[in-house]
Length: 170
Image (cartoon, rainbow, N blue to C red; front, side):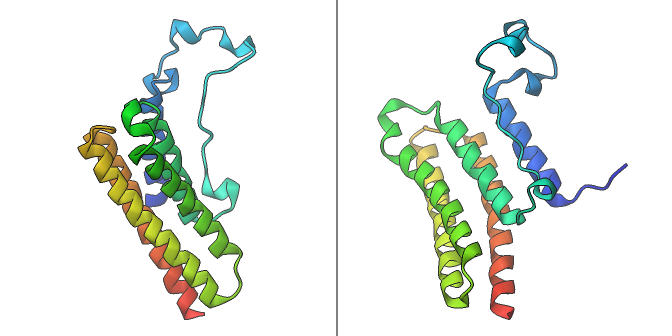
């Protein structure tokens, strides 16, 4: 049996949580009659593609940030309309800005500029944390969803801090 790293286990856990939020037959382990025969339909059920680091060949921090952003978009679809254009939108935008800053840092060759983008990504992580807590207080998301986001934030922040340290050593 193949040994799995903490990163792979964490990604698998987030994938299971996303599938549970979507209530797809894949998460239940059985095929539901409502989905039977849809493979020939013109529109297939929504499924989130898996971001496997070895196949995509990108850094783990990118994979975790994408999973986090995906999860945020999935859970906020069900949030109350009165909060959708305020805290929910800010939460979604901060998750996209996080990925944007990571990509900008990755393509930057100058160390000072790269560190600035990495710091911006760290700020985006903190903003996501703040918006998540506020969304929970306003009941836009559940306590369980908040806990899942918090775990993913911690993992992404750990990976980002490692990348920042490796950038400073060069």
